[in-house]
Figure 1 (spheres, helix red, strand yellow):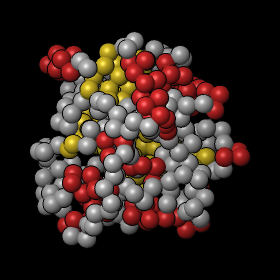
Figure 2 (figure 1 turned 135 degrees about the horizontal axis):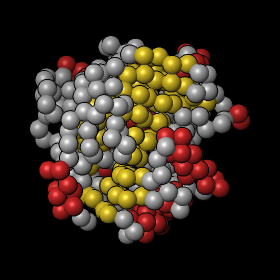
Figure 3 (figure 1 turned 135 degrees about the vertical axis):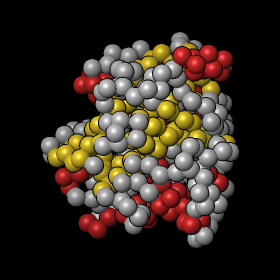
Length: 333
């Protein structure tokens, strides 16, 4: 663990917005997560790496997206937690692209044979780079962005972010679920700010942790874009979180048969101020009434799945645009 490396870098970081865009690619890893950010200063930040196996499918898609984005290495890799659909692709990706800095929450809490192997395989790659273990409240040393860790290792920020901290009326109806002892509840969650633009990505943080984070006071505040927690599964994405975030746009990294549940989709769709939901896949469980317009769905079925990503481009003045390369449809906000 090299927390010292993180602290040393912080004073040198310039938080002045660049003259370019913050570009984000939400990569199709079939119901896992992999989200590539290219900062206005050209740094690359990747959240998660999708699944292992499948003949390197997910690593290949990430590498191809990085090529489209014009980057030849991953400057910062954030692993939200140690499940196969998030950390499994690390060894294959590391064989395709250099990874300079590995960011995670520390040791795994799952010690089954499969869970330990995922963690051990990941740590073999970490040994080749710089390892940063984060805690809530840490700022990542990424030039031009204010990137704050709001959850990690089951802990949450104890002070609200600037402009946040108001009482959350959506907590009145919040009811906890069974405790979650898995890696999901350990997820590294991020709030990313570029000028007036704000986005939140909480990995697979689950229901009860959302309640702790957002109740009785909203410690995150509002965002422009919500990268949907846990692929749109109903063990995450509570109204206490989603409605209080008050996003204009939600982007769901679901698969055809994973995530995109009726409950999660309905919560987002009923969120005050929501303008659009974009999806990486048409959801088989959602059916006609719980999927967004097809022009905002990157991939329709796995049988005809070209691994299309969704692209988000944000400006420092708060304006942003989402594009679906499959249909050529773009919308500005």
